[in-house]
Length: 336
Image (cartoon, rainbow, N blue to C red):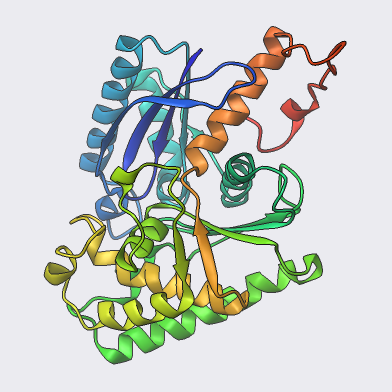
């Protein structure tokens, strides 16, 4: 079965198509994306401008045609903080539906955290035990932790790299004072959120998802994306702290020349580094493993599971029979 997921994020709009069947991992088939930064299209009232809406609608139409052209059998579309927190978010969703016939599902921050966690759990399996996952987006920062397929605690806070850059780092390069003030704000916000995880104890594995974590790991010497998803990548706090200081002294123009930093991400990579550094320090961990799966994969996995339940496709035979799984997952608040 070929499934498609359309992700309307703060930095990019991205369609991913994968091939999947029962008992096998989803295999990427094709993708189509555009660096549309919706946060750059906010007016003084915090509403997405008409131009921003038109660009969004144009891409949604492209994505639908792309999925149809490549024989996608199911299509899931969702949006995160960029639309969720805009002043006219509901009107934008209605306009997209009216002009494209695509219904964008609006995810809450906690749902983002939970679905990303599920992707991480599927990637690493059960052997790690308790997992803490950290995800830095453009508008928000998600944390989730637990021992099961879905987390026991899932929290989202307004510490996205794009948001923080826009609100706190107005100079290029930033002043030492602005970096200090932002660092203080991040740590204060992070400590309050991290306190919610205290009763869970220490995680056996700490994972990092999102383009920001991948870029930071690449800066610190991790293998490039061209090496493939199965190469182990890790970001150590020691290296991260060093690069945070370097990034704070660099202009956006200079950051573009760094390995793993695109022109789109260059302005906000410092804010992302500050968030990552604070997270590792607050949770008292020395390193984070970079997981190639994140929110899109989590939603695809959940959607595929739901479709299999609805179709009542039999599980591959093991021994003398198989277990009948419950369809109760469909009733969970974050189910697609």
